[in-house]
Length: 90
Image (cartoon, rainbow, N blue to C red; front, side, top):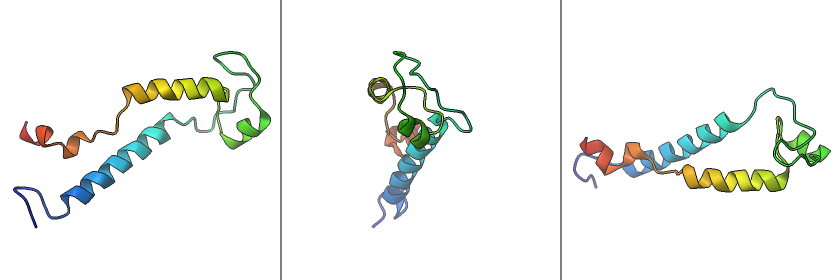
């Protein structure tokens, strides 16, 4: 059942777009082709070899990365403005 100006699969398109945006955001944050650091840039602790091999271009220890991720969550939301009714009215 279509509602207003939206197509029948508008909800699915909005969900897929939100997921695609989140994936693009994570891919853009990943360091590509960069060698992993031996010591954390934040606290100076040694980054374990297993972590350096698992995550290409890692720059922070687990505890510092966890704190950075918490801060990023405060600023980055998965709110899809393309699917927002407000953005369509402008």
